[in-house]
Amino acid sequence: MVETYRKPTLDKDLDKFATMEEATGLLNRGFVTPGLAIIFIFLCAIIAAVFVTGHPGAVVIIAAAMIGAYMALNIGANDVANNVGPAVGSQAMTLGVALAIAAVFESAGALIAGGDVVSTISKGIIDPVAVSDPNVFISAMMAALVSAAMWIHLATWLGAPVSTTHSIVGGVMGAGIAAAGVDAVNWPTMGSIAASWVISPFLGGLIAAGFLAFIKTAIIYQDDKIAAARRWVPVLIAIMVGAFATYLSLKGVKAIIKIPMGTALLIGLGAAIAGWLIARPVIARQARGLENRNQSLRKLFGLPLIFSAALLSFAHGANDVANAVGPLAAIVHTAELGEVAPKVVIPLWVMAVGAVGISLGLLLFGPKLIRMVGNQITKLNPMRAYCVALSAAITVIIASWLGLPVSSTHIAVGAVFGVGFFREWYTEKSSRRAEYVARHRINEPGTEHAKSRLAEQRRRKLVRRSHFLQIVAAWVITVPAAAVLSGFLFVVLRSVLA
Image (tube, rainbow, N blue to C red; front, side, top):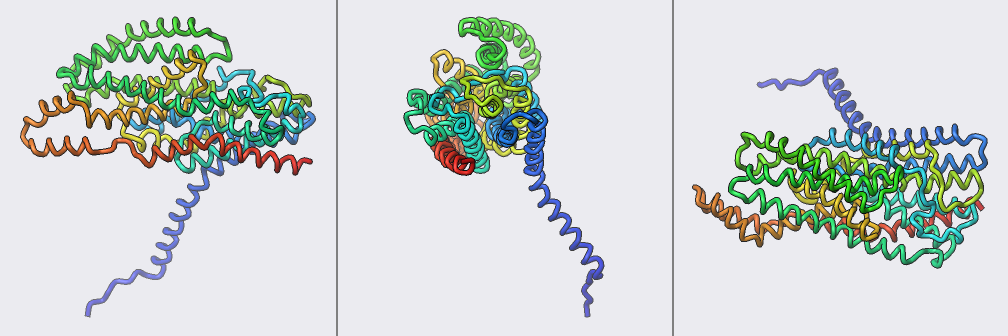
């Protein structure tokens, strides 16, 4: 008779305790990030209390500081992913490095160039006369902040990158309608914002696809890829340097100094020439000894991608911090002085709430959207990610020149879609690609396998349609959803405070 081994009762109990501890640890990890976010929100309330103690409306300002902190966390969780997602998805940098770079440059952009004056009625959407009563105005701004933050939170949870600017615009519009009726809304302004839903992603996708087409034609499908790269990669880097110099001149430092479009373009041209002169010997040195294959080309785009992610983060922090602190600054001004002003000065502590909140939101909740933008929409490599980053800067410049309001989120994600859809089209239709594959693969051993692989690549969909439809749907309903929620919250606040 064979005796079966039985663990002593003590060993069984210890195993149970170990399993329970492991399960508890996994469960606790899920509470760490929201716990830190809650701690940050309460710290912001304490900071606000220190600065406004003794002022009239101190309770309202403290509550608004908490709401502004919540909004900043959500901006960091959702919007910043567009700046670093492509670089992470292309493996030009790790997620940890991307989070560190974005957090540092977002904060720097917000604090250095974030602006000390913003429009309190968010880009002239609502007529200030219609909400001239301070109590009504404060309720409207608080409702707008809460609704925008809640919508962005929901979109982040669903994995949809949405425009934080459109969210706050919808919030202000909904609260304004609830407060003063539809006549209070500047409908031409809202019409131009609605037009940007289409213009931003389409323009971003078109420019990104154009650059990818150039890279494929001029570099990838050349017989001597490395020689072609030595010729053209410095030119592409020069275009990027010039585009970002112009972009930062127009947007990134507009709070410090106003630079006209012509001057910004001259600055960009000078930076482009300098970038080409520097990049040419660097790329020649990097290309020395590389094998004549696509994998080698990716190494030449890695460092420019890191710089582009940093510059995009700086510009984003300078511009989009106003989405969190603009309404908050307006509430602080109105509660302290008892008047509604068209423009207000943003106190330093309010700017700090926005800057730190965006960076913290990115670190705590950003990885989900970074993976979505970088990996899950379409497959990116350094060349494709470079096209996305370049498109983001150039599209903003074109939009500024045309006077069109655009969303950085829509541009970046539209560029990712543009790259993916162009790859689908190019894989299926390009005779040049078919000739190249036939010349380099089909004449080798395993001809039938190469032919079947080419046929399979032509059939594949390189953009995930489920993500495409989900993101587009989120874009379309952002303004109406934030507006409806804001109007409801405004009514609730007025009934509570009445």
